[in-house]
Length: 126
Image (tube, rainbow, N blue to C red; front, side, top):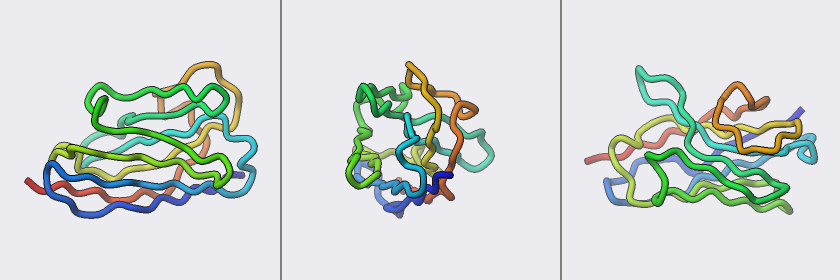
C-alpha cells in the first residue's frame, strides 16, 4: 500500500503562484509514476501532469504546459507541482496519484493510477 498526502493548496490571485507537495509513504519503492489530476466543480477529473521516475520523463496537459512544472525528490518520496501564472480556470481540487506497476510511458489516464491522495483545494481569484 502507498499513502499519499497533498499539501500547499490555497487562495491566490490570478497571475500568482503556488507550490503543491505530495508526500508518499508505505511501499514507496513500488511507485513507478506519480502524477497530478484536478477536478473543478461540475467537471470530470482531468490530467494535469505526471513524472515517470525511472526516466524522469514528464507529460503535461496542454492547458498547463509552460506554466506548471512537476518535479520530485526520491530521497523524500515527494513530488511537487510548481504552478505559475495561475488563472481562474485553474481553480479545482488537485489530487496526487501514484502507479505501482511498471509502465514505459507517462500515463494521462486516471484509470492507470492505483493510489490517490485526499486532494487539496486551489482557488484562483480574478
